[in-house]
Length: 106
Image: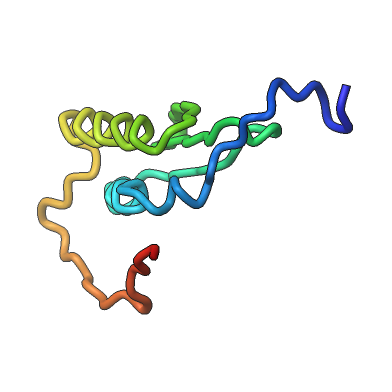
């Protein structure tokens, strides 16, 4: 047994690759819809967790690949919009220029 429990394997998810994908855009969409988005990893770093919370209800999933997480987030956005969550009808949107540009990996 390891210091903080039994470590299941040697495979570690590349967290940087998760954020160098469509995931940050999906997260910003969900936050704009009024959801809390929490991101973490399993203690052995073998998976990334994404938790969505709205009005006390939450759902969490674990991912090893960014494309699977993006697909899940896309489905969540469609489902939540279908339920009327995140509607901004009648609300003014404040726009602002991002302070930093998106970097391109070389």
